Image (cartoon, rainbow, N blue to C red; front, side, top):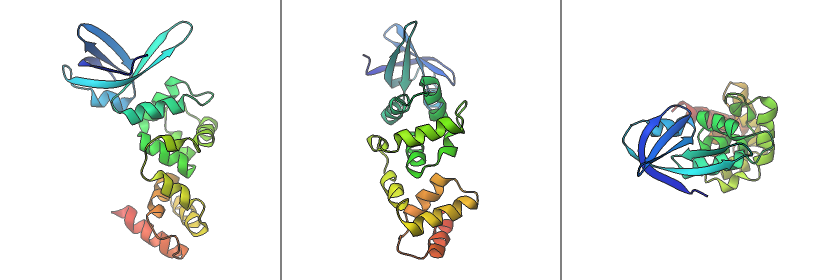
Length: 195
């Protein structure tokens, strides 16, 4: 129904932003990332919106970036992931990091979100693995390719055993020639991640 709102920031908190649009103020529930981007009262902003209509309420969600809105819409398609959990995920991870985590099968990074447990994080990864192409992320294709390469997959496993997250390890390994020996891939990945 609403595509976006453009107006001045009237009020904000980590959970919402109030936007005054020519005398009518709209309260948009939002992620902490969007709230930080709209933290100057009186500043003109545009929020991309999603209207959630329920039996007893109509809630408006607003996002500073269209990719964040797209990611939010994908997350709420998962059974058990409502707007509250989707905002929690987007408050700790950018849309690009959500996509990388899903492409790498790194459900643990999703559990950093308030209220998202292991089972729900695994469901998000499993159900969105094929759908993440609709969210623009440069490195998702590369990360997906390395998961099918034996040497690269072994290098990722070694890096995660050293304490790196699976998505960070996958991203680092995706930038290295997969025809190299596993040890060389690990060395180069460690060198790249230390920069």
